[in-house]
Image 1: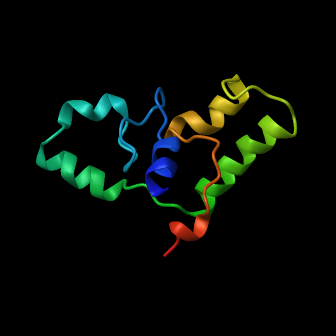
Image 2: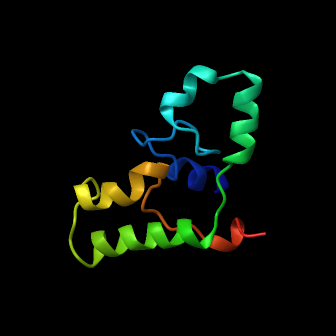
Length: 95
């Protein structure tokens, strides 16, 4: 069950290339370098209230206002962090 949830939260076509960190696609050229390791540690994805707010905001636009998932308004919210409008039980990620 956990695998299904993780796969459903990976976004293709967002600005971030990795599902575990917020490293942008234009920084891929540093892959494997010491600088890359430090950047990935500093920019690790965290399930926090800001991320949850963005996902919920996008879900409200989709379900309550009738916007398409790939509409410009929804994309402005989700694409910068490569988020998807799927709600997962938050207690799994909060520590």
